[in-house]
Image (tube, rainbow, N blue to C red; front, top):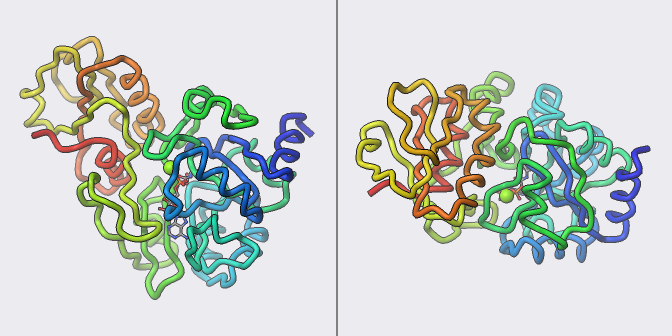
Length: 317
Ligand code: TXA
Ligand code: MG
């Protein structure tokens, strides 16, 4: 076994924290059956204890151990999308400590699609609670360097699996109620889910990201840069005064480059998602007056990206 994995398992067994790569973003992991280990996640992140943490497992069989109920819909979706960027919310087994789920009776479960994550989860052979490995309200890390930048010495070990492939957090699908409901859009889209299990509701549309939290699990998390950040559409582009600001725009639109701090991201949603957080971080390091992010088209394939942009920015005045 990879010696880093051995070390990681030892740390997890001892109640410590390990950062590890997934296909979406890097996670900050702890043993989900150990209350004090999970409390350390909240402490290190500065995370409100009302915000539940996702539990990661190596395969479907292990996921079933930590859900009290495993409906047919869960089985079908797991077979279709795991390992992959889909988290399913199900009634939780008592083995998962209440700290993981912020006191909720449900748990978010997922099997990540990353070889290092899977190796770690198999070797640990237990449930690993892991939020994204950033300080609360900050941009999720998509490289090991981002994790170092965020958490420094507060994390005992960072497994480096290179840049994340998907680049934004998993889809969160609630299967614990009467109707399946997407609580957080992700690259496993509503349409993809509906092809497998039929009609799916969307959670409350994301309102103003600067409002206080509603209920556990429903926080309108920011994922925000430190720099003041705005979003803009094509008609607003001409009103940006480009001096000393950073801009993220989209390839394929016929316009001159705004300024030297412009990052042009691909016009394909999957490619865009892969690079978005790194681009935001790069501009955030530059000590700019503001960051402007161009809103992609209002199309289903862009829904997860648009959600993350909305959380990271405010509308241009
Ligand atoms: O892609 C991901 O999901 C990454 C990687 C590390 O797996 N993790 C991640 O975790 O984004 P985090 O903590 O940043 O986001 C977890 C979100 C919560 O804010 C909440 O919205 C939802 O997942 N969630 C987790 N458990 C839930 C539950 N029992 N009920 C409702 N929502 C839940
Ligand atoms: Mg997060």
